[in-house]
Image (cartoon, rainbow, N blue to C red):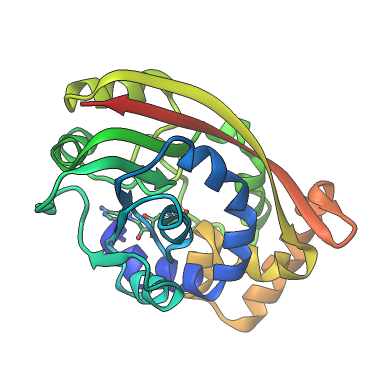
Length: 257
Ligand SMILES: C[S@@+](CC[C@H](N)C(=O)[O-])C[C@H]1O[C@@H](n2cnc3c(N)ncnc32)[C@H](O)[C@@H]1O
């Protein structure tokens, strides 16, 4: 499934359904993302608009762009303080120049990241984006697929170099992409953040979001129950009372034109 289809169907729908859960889990990234951000702001891969809404509190003008129609619909319902566009940020011709281009986990899905970041360089002067470090540093995000594998043997192996969650895991690759795309002063800093979700939402989370969630769209209720039984214990180390806690190992990436 290509990224545009994924985010307009199963993937995007799950993020809309779990908006409150992902908003809470990723809320600690809002402050580092917006540090020093002002003026006109473009939020790339803005999803359901949590960071776009937050940016609207510090910026004079904010536009959120996302390839997912259902996620942009949710973003528009969230706030009228920002403008939202359904478009592919890799190729969309932005008809204004922004002071800041920001993104929380919205820039790892490009087919041609150099061309995409060159396009974003025409759209804005300062870049400030957050992306995942490698899978080995983010075991929470692999727990479901590892534990589900015996029940879902056809679950595709992740290609961490292909467009997707961990496509920016390698620091050198990120630096090369941005330099080739014409960005200057590239800095890639480690940003480790503790995230939480309600323990009551854990089962919905791992059966709706990520590769297991996508795969379960094609399986019956009986298989879903077997997956839950296999996967639930794998999250036990992360459960703390009524919360699930994990450390998100990410990059804070900055650059300028
Ligand atoms: C992991 S979600 C993050 C959403 C949001 N930034 C947040 O932090 O809640 C990734 C987002 O990137 C969007 N996306 C993927 N490829 C894109 C592209 N080529 N152009 C614009 N948005 C894209 C997806 O539709 C999705 O909303």
